[in-house]
Length: 87
Image 1 (tube, one colour):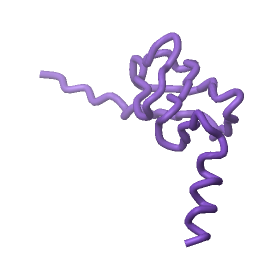
Image 2 (cartoon, rainbow, N blue to C red):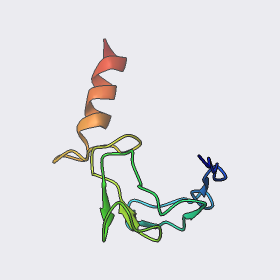
Image 3 (cartoon, rainbow, N blue to C red):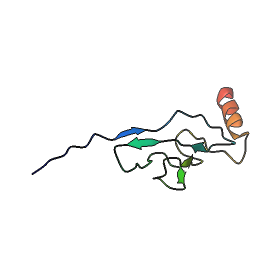
């Protein structure tokens, strides 16, 4: 019997990126060697065209980690803070 041990996969998710609320999509630039591919995971957003594309575009959900859900009334938080201070 011949046993062949292949090198361990090496993965790189690419450089850190900053996004803005008016343009939240990050174009990913992953690489994988010594394996047939990889799968993006994590977050509550979506990967386009899919989770196996190393150059996928990731768009976070509006309410996922690091996101703040917008209120219908933009003054709601300011009004609540003012009420707390008056007490």
